[in-house]
Image (cartoon, rainbow, N blue to C red; front, side, top):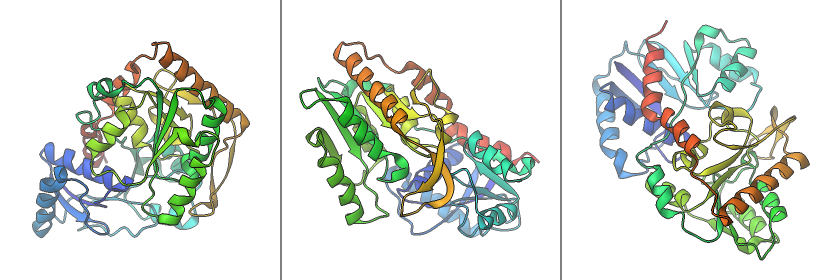
Length: 362
């Protein structure tokens, strides 16, 4: 199939999704013409050949082919040619603005990555025939159980959180619960990679200083530079025993699924995008009972709601952290086999196949 594909090509979440979808579409022998959104910044050499080939195809693209644009809702959607105009978008809140709804109604077809997001759109009155679910994926060759088994050899119980510093991601709750769960003498460590390239040095320094100033600050290791490749992300995650993601809202959460693919125990909120693949078999869930207006003083100003993480959710997280530590120290922290099985279902090959299948369905 001929596809005209517009996506960021960079290290942002959208960029990672776009590059993996592009590579999988090309491997499946689809003719993809690439139209980058924003500056072209190929993060790793592994994507260089496929990006260059897809860029070259722009010169003679099929103007009658479907046009798929991977981006936030409010950014302009400029379809290539006169084929089916599709928007693939990822969002975290349960409410949409009037402007966002107008943008969505002007599109032939809207793709979202979870049934939670599909329900949000349908609740806002979008026609069921126009809203399709295309789940995201994980690179099983890079995030493989063998890598996880090889690197989990520390006596300390190592917890990891990967995700840009943001109130939405819940690092504030994670640090609070970590300090409540353990004592200075406990052999535990929290590894955090939260570098937010979009917000600047002062913003990142605020989060780093907050983490280090807590009672167990010397047990929190923070990485202050971007990853240079997917392999480096995998190796960082693989050294840990458990991934912890107490997010207030997620459109998907690539890192949570990547930790599952490595066979690691994971802890996450049972809300939003997490519900597409995290369940009681493959994840220690933090149950959410209430929502609150999404306010962070930066990006979210109450235009929607997200999970309320109160004392009960913090206590659940404390219990989970202690349980993982006890199992590690007693030699009973097993491989997350259910997580591996889940990751094997949610591959980028599957995501590309679902996208193509939905492009062909009227």
